[in-house]
Image (tube, rainbow, N blue to C red; front, side, top):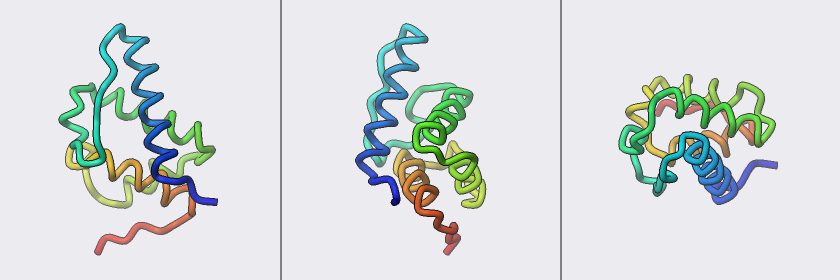
Length: 98
């Protein structure tokens, strides 16, 4: 069964909260429209986020693969792209570059 977008969003908030605690920083606030580049986190933290989402939802490498297949850079993506990627990867959907 596909992961619901709100479930993915909740998991993303928890991961950012845990990351902020580890780095002794304030948690990142975001909406679905927030650009990843505007989150103010290093690219390695974004990779960590994607990896944690994959692990949390047992997606193996499907989320990374899904995001690569969009042929967009992380800096050009929004939070909604990651959330939609979780939903699509959990449903086994192919990427549409239309």
